[in-house]
Image (cartoon, rainbow, N blue to C red; front, side, top):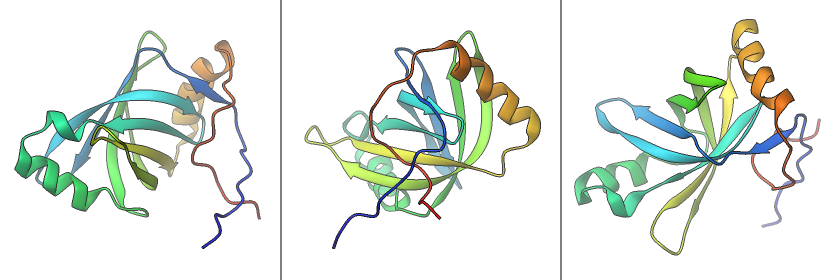
Length: 136
């Protein structure tokens, strides 16, 4: 099956230090290193090998494309405890057992957009591919 073509609608920034906390139902939260961030979403790594077997198994079932999650992003000093709902757009298994996630933010309020615009306007963009909205 051919991959869909995507057109990025905002600048994506490579992040050296940051974390995404994944939350879903009664499953224990997972802290994931933040790889990059844009006004529309982010990319992170779910560290499955670092979790106990039961928790990792549950998260592998949860981390499916189109699944909605509650996430909290911290990327000091510009973005701390930023809570938002996100949709899993990509969940790619990695050789080390982790899962690379592409997350699209959902239902951003004006204040949340402003919070994302501050770090995104002060940092250097990256050319990495990741989740974005399909061209319409």
